[in-house]
Image (cartoon, rainbow, N blue to C red; front, top):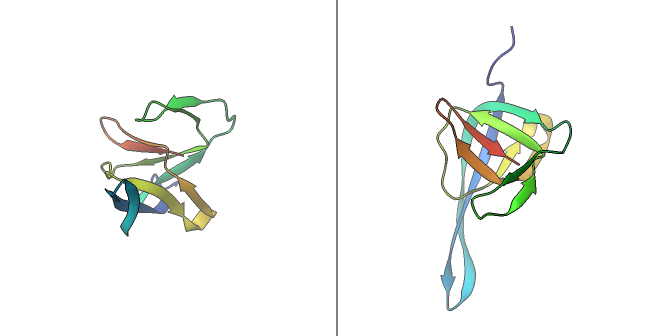
Length: 99
């Protein structure tokens, strides 16, 4: 039997602020999230992130965890993945992190 959510990801939330017109990095925190990672087979899927910029989907991480505001990176040690989060989209029963 295949486990539905077999991967454990570490989600990094970075914080910072503008100070005198320059970005100052704040402390970052990590959250453990259980889900399933699916790599992109074709590299042909184009999506738009919340900033309106298009990106090519390299993989998807499906989870029941709610979206974490400010999440910037996803790390899944069991498969050697450490990537920037391009978009985190909510659906009715789950959310999907696109990288």
